[in-house]
Image (cartoon, rainbow, N blue to C red; front, side, top):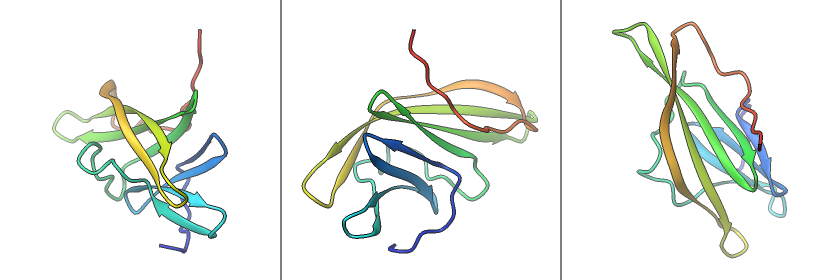
Length: 121
């Protein structure tokens, strides 16, 4: 787990780098120069299989996870979103708590997620 595989699914929240790799959310421990699993999410988010587009972004100190799910029978793609509160516990642990998760949009299967952005009004 100490090695890093390229992922275009990453974001920085309150000076901590997060990424999705091998279907799991991870955070970078700069003191140990090591990627660590974000704890507390098992069973609360789907396992992101190979080929699923997952994107992360900062949402006012929380993390937003956006991903797609192909619905082959309809030729459409469902876009899902989750809001995760983050908490450091001790030196080497970061925990996430899913505060909200829902299907937010349906698009043609040829569409893909480029970059999620957040805005406050």
